[in-house]
Length: 420
Image 1 (tube, one colour):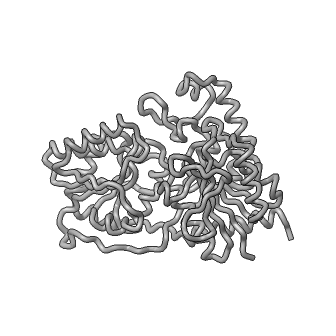
Image 2 (cartoon, rainbow, N blue to C red):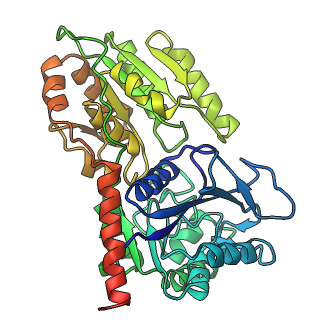
Image 3 (cartoon, rainbow, N blue to C red):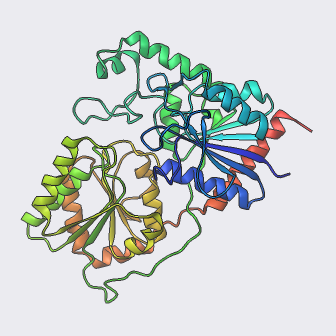
C-alpha cells in the first residue's frame, strides 16, 4: 500500500544547497516515483526568506507538494521552537490536514526539537523516522564536534567539557539541554545514520544502538561524463575542490598545500568550485590572501549549479575533500566516485568509511597541509596510480535504491505497530 510521507528538512535546496537539503529533497522525489504521496516541508528564516504576515507557510517551486515553514523565532541552544502561538498551531493544522502515515525528519534545526512530540500527539499512529546527518543534537557548536578554541576535534560531549567551550553557559545548562533533547527524541520510532561513524557517536551520547539503522545516502541515477582531458594517459595533475568554503571544510589547508607545491616546482592546477555564503569577513580575508599567493596555479571558480557537477568533475583528475571536522557522509565524495574520480580526503569520520586508502582514493592526515601537499605531489606524478584508483571507484547507490530501503523500514515499523 502506498504511503503518505511528510519529508522535513531544515531548509530547501533552492535556498541553501547543502548536502542534507539536497539528499532530503532527492529522497522526497524518489518516494513519489515509488508511488507514495509525499510532501516536502523545509524550515527557513530571514537569512533566506522574509516573513509573510498571517501565516507560517510559504510556497516554493511550481507545484503544490513543496512548502516552506518560516521559523524566524528559534532557540538554537535548546533546538527549540519558541513561537508557540504561530508556528506550532500551523504545524498542527498541517499534520491534521495531510495526515501522513510516515514523518521522515532530516533535521530539527528551525522546526524545533518538539516537532516529533507534536507529531505523536496529533497523529498517535504515525511512524516517525529521523535521519541523523550531523551532530547538532550532541554539540551546541553548530553541530561540528569541534572545540571553540583552536582547531581540536571533540571526541565526546559532557556538561563540563561543553562548558569549557562556552564559559558563559553553565554546565548545568548543558545537562538540561541534553536531557531535554533526549526526552523529546524518545518519541522517534527509528533513527537512520548514513555512516557507522555517526551512529557510534550517537550511541556514545546515549541513544540505543538498536534504534539506529545505517543506510548510506544515494545519488540520482548515473549520468557519467567522459573525462575531458588526458585521454593519452599523460600526467593526471588537475585537482578540484567542490562545495561551500568555510573554516571547517579545509579550504585554507588546501591552499596552504597548494602554496607548498608551487614553492616545490610541482606542475599542477587546482580548481576551487564553491562560494563563501554566510562566512565571517576575517575568514574571507584569509582565503583572499591565500588565493592571491597561489593564483599562478589555483583558479577560483566560484559557486556552481548542481547540474554542472558532472562536466566540472570531468575536467579534473582528482577531487580533494580536506575537511578538518568529522564529516558524516559528504555527497561530494559520492559525486566524484560516480564520475570515476578518485578522491583525496581527510582520513577521519565518515570520509574514512567512503574512501579506502590506495584502493579508490587516498587519505591524508586532517588539518595537515604538509601531508596533503605530499599526497598531491604523488598523485600528480603517477598516472598509473590514477588509472588504478579510478578503476576502483565505488559507484554510490542510486537514490531510488535508497528510497526502497527506507520504504522497507517504514513497512517493518508498520508491522510492529499494527501486527497482523
